[in-house]
Length: 193
Image (cartoon, rainbow, N blue to C red; front, top):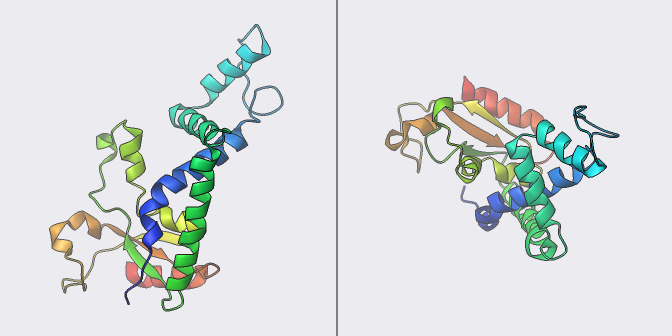
């Protein structure tokens, strides 16, 4: 069955805009005074305590997302980034809903390229974000999805030549309509065995 999800090309940036905005908003309360870790070695102003506490308590990725989220929620950028990302999310959800009128589930690779070993993961955050390009659309649309180990049978799978990239055989993703987790698990279980 052929389906159309034209908004999928914008899913990755939309996801990171929304996720960063939510992280920024949700983590703003962790100030070391009322909530969260407090660095007790800080003396000085309340602002110094906030800075030190957040520097010690939040890792690089969390700090990056807070900064990005603060920017996309700022008055000068909210329309260009956040509101556009929310619009993309709404369109993508509608496209998935339309696709699921003729499908029980959607099966995709987990990643479009070879999955690196942990020792090969680079420190470039953008490159690491690109690893999520296949899994983000389901999350953005609020759909149940799961990854399962999978090795296709020797016979060809229509439209996919797994011999060109054997790493695509290591796992696949099963995406189901909203509320259909049981069906998704049954399909994933059948594919795994």
